[in-house]
Every structure is written in structure tokens, then in C-alpha cells.
Image 1 (tube, rainbow, N blue to C red):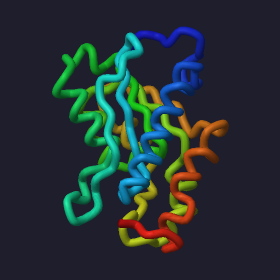
Image 2: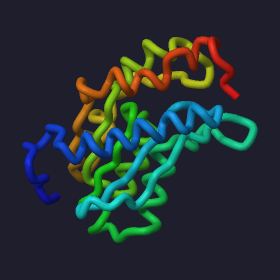
Image 3: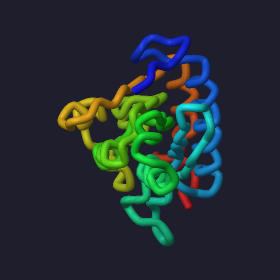
Image 4: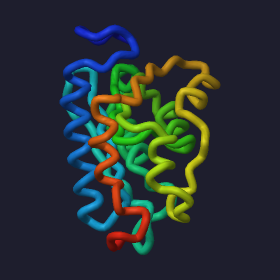
Length: 177
């Protein structure tokens, strides 16, 4: 994997902050559509967005496997070669769940950046039946594989902003569509 200019391995760069802002805006769009407020973007090694997705796991048209990260990873895998995917970064407003981490791994994406941890998300969603959080950090999923995936997150400077799209959504204060 090529090194990112301007940031040591494991640290967020200015480019990461820019793409995370775009991801956070997309999560708000998902919420505005009445969907779960999750979004993901895949950016290639040259800084071009190659895929973006919003969560679509809620009925009636969604299914539980249509998480934003899985959808974006699959779209990128259809568009790029394995070599190009290894140089890509997937941005997500929340830490990828175990299912999405597996999809990122199998698609061959080389780097993941997320704003808010799974534990922080759990504090917002509680025991909501539409988000039964798995306590399995994406780093642990990736550590079991044969290829290395760099992980940057959570991003303390953006975690609070990422949480805002979830506030009031999971506790019934607003219509969830």
C-alpha cells in the first residue's frame, strides 16, 4: 500500500477530513430520506470518489445487509481492479460493523477511515431493534485476515458531528420512515 503524503500511518490527513465531511453530509441525506443515518464513500489513490452509498437496510425496500459500507465497497469492486482497490480508502461516518468489515476485506480495499466508534454508536442507538450492535471492532475483523488494512478512527475531531445525524433518530423522537 502506498503511503499517504502528509500524514503518518494511522493518522487522519487533511484529505481525510475533507472526504469525511462529504461522508457526514451524505449520512444526513440518508436520514432526510427516512433511512438509517449511515453513509460511506470510497476514494481511489488519486483522490477521486469511485463509489458512495447511503444505508438502505430498512423495510420496505431495503434489506438488513444493505449497509452503506458494504454497498460502497461492492460498487468500488465492480469498477476497479484489485490493484486499484488496494490503494483505495473507504470513509464511513461510523465504524464498520463486522459484516461491512468482511465486505471491505473481501473487496480488497486497503484503508478505512471512520468518524465515530461502534461503542459511541451503541450509546446513541441503545437496544433499538433496527441496530443490534455487534461488539466486534473492525480492527479485530481485519486482524484475522491475510492482508493488511490500515484503519484510522475514531476521529475525535469529527465524532461529535457524526453523532449529530443519529441524535433523536433511534429513540422515537422523530419518525424513522
